[in-house]
Length: 119
Image 1 (spheres, helix red, strand yellow):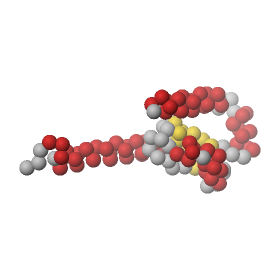
Image 2 (tube, rainbow, N blue to C red):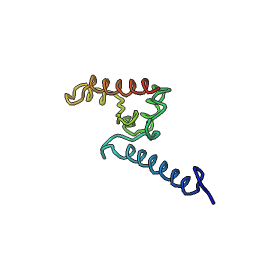
Image 3 (spheres, rainbow, N blue to C red):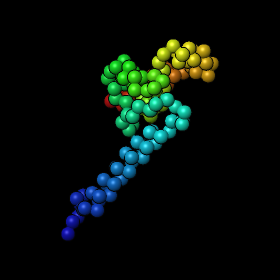
Image 4 (cartoon, helix red, strand yellow):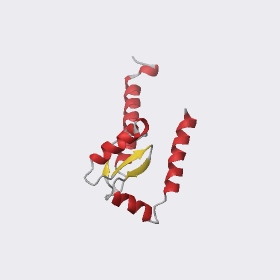
């Protein structure tokens, strides 16, 4: 009765495959942060928080305001990022030898460069 590309079973199987793929990416990025990470700001699967790219300072202010400590976490692409605000957080960041601004910036720059070359 049905044949070719419009077989109902093929359409259903394709839809289910796409749905499972999108959901697995979403749940992988949404739950891979450590338990003690600051308040998580939900974004889109694969791209992360779009407002980070379109209105960075507004995104930072609203995310910090929505967190009790002013610190928050989110994704840029598939990379986890922790946003810090306040004097104590800045002091911790700059005095902690395990945190490296240069390495974080290099990682972020790599994500942006990949996005530019893929377009």
